[in-house]
Image 1 (tube, rainbow, N blue to C red):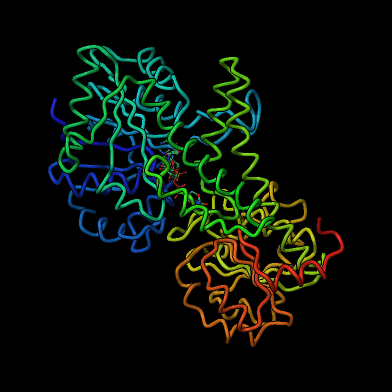
Image 2 (cartoon, rainbow, N blue to C red):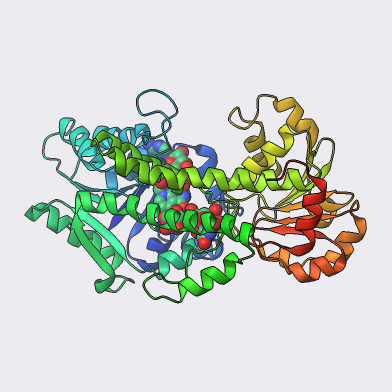
Length: 479
Ligand code: NAD
Ligand code: UDX
């Protein structure tokens, strides 16, 4: 079989960019990205794509209508495809067995059943979604139990390692592509077919071939290791604040050891995003299912530390503001979970904002890419508040940082957008209430300069002289 047509089920943050890059690099392959959501497909076919990702517009503009199509015609796309990516969402279960930890595979199962119902010729089905180990077996069972005569399937695991905000570069210059398959002649042939697609632009030496279960577990393991590094440095940020050490200096010093390496050592208000927490919880559930409580507890601590970091930061904000933020105007700069994306899933800004709202603050929020409806959706959903009407009364969304900060008692910087480094902080200081407080949750600002302007400044992992003395005077509850 030579792959001529690819179908992708799921036009989200993974399906959209991944298939756009495949279409770019494989002009002879027809790539159709399908979604159940008509609205999402309409957006992919419009001038304003449903997700913001640097470089994505350009890739889509080059390929859309040539060999890249976005469609709700799932039946036709499945029928004509030689290879089908399953790139649907795999959220944490919110009800039933494994609630709060296990991955909910209902969308993966739904996709497999669609394929089984529709396919009339042989298909390679590729699991691109992040799934628990052995999920390929579920897909295989569904497909093989519902197969029409003469139709054969091969199931491959091909997890995606892109990070949001850098997805196009991550895909075009992937450090590695991982493909897992069955150790049978048919399984190995299917692996070769998928390798052939990637080899249009990825050097063969960068394509790792494993068995299916190693591939599935490697994805969970990669995210668990990355998140663990962040929790490790964040744990040390608390030690730094208590001792006078500077977490950036510590990160630089330890990162020079090539065994540790310099990346992913930025202390922050905690990791967010749709993957880290979900995938670690998934791993924890797997460990519990395998009766490995010590291993489960080890990974659970990475999540616990992240919760601690988010609440620790918010508590510091409240304590510095004389232990009450009731009716105070607080500007939140940045709402996405990291810079260069409009994605807010599990963003630490949600936890910070919700806690401040609970304490009676009035929030003025600005993010360069997150729209009004999305911020309101996050802050009014039942996980964030029991009183959505109060949230609506106390939140104002702005279209510039300067308008958000006018008259504010404090600024809380939650996302490391580059534009926040370039703001005129003297101008900002002049329009704020005094004393003016700055809480830099991403360590990106010039703290000496802010202090010289007159701000009281607090950041992560570093005790700044003036702010800490004010904080100690202002709060009776500091340890
Ligand atoms: P997403 O929610 O942005 O997109 C998933 C899409 O699948 C939705 O638009 C949904 O409507 C669609 N869908 C669900 N069932 C469908 C079906 N049967 N047929 C057609 N469409 C269907 O999710 P995402 O962020 O793209 O993540 C997808 C998967 O990739 C998840 O398993 C995630 O863990 C994994 N992943 C995500 C990232 C990331 O950065 N977002 C990175 C690596 C891996
Ligand atoms: C992650 C993985 O990096 C990627 O390989 C996987 O495919 C999906 O999950 P993503 O969540 O998009 O990607 O972004 P990432 O850059 O990993 O950042 C996740 C969170 O960690 C963000 O909130 C970010 O601000 C935070 N982070 C990252 C830190 O706090 N410190 C760091 O040093 C790095």
